[in-house]
Length: 204
Image (cartoon, rainbow, N blue to C red; front, side):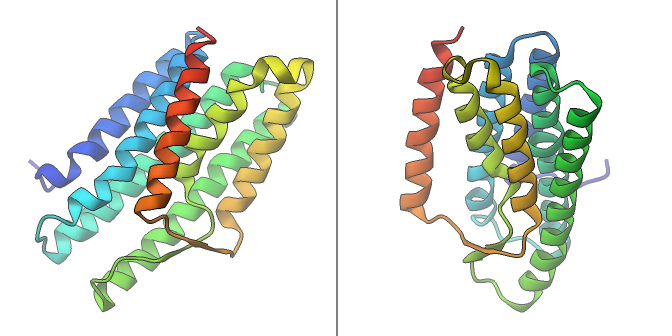
């Protein structure tokens, strides 16, 4: 079969499958479960890099890993959040344009990252310390948090949600340096995700 099969890509495949299930939940009117799937995909993405570095890989396996990861991220953190937003009510023509912008920015961010990361790995084996633009995986933290406060936002929820979608899309492609989270940063994100999970469960 085509492809490179080893344990370093398992979490990436799980992340994709979870997001596809999440799309089903979103289109079935179950946004809480959709957001939980989005957060789960984000958790898988957080761990797949460290796991991949535990195995010695040749250049083709590394390149395959980069491509698979970005293709999965486009579905999980580009298309999937747009589907959730659509299911929440962003369905008029202007809202659809916003969602198209969001997916396009996510795709550009991921393609640019692919080029930069492929070039970087040919020059050094050191871990990346900075990102150019905000990583698309941050959507797994930002959007569930906004939805968790849906009841407090009242009738303005969908407008605020749409505005945040635009801001996040722009941050994907702005030429800003963002320091990669270390162990403490990842720990903070896990705590935030747990709080979000508790808040989301109250909405079921």
